Length: 76
Image (tube, rainbow, N blue to C red; front, side):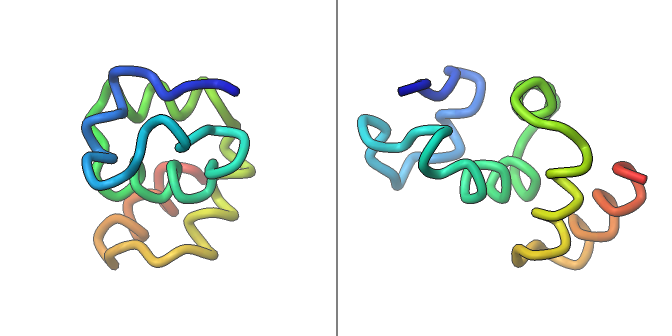
């Protein structure tokens, strides 16, 4: 199991970090980081995945209109 980096754990304060894993919860983790993450968290996410997959997450998940619009532009 790949544990989350210290750069991103602060965004999951309400979750049990001992069971939260990239393999099982990648969509939830990506959605949270895309909505709330700082530059370090975004860099971590971009190392873990690719833009094509992130485009699917942006289209499928509920993000604020501002975040959704930003990520659509950034990922194109």
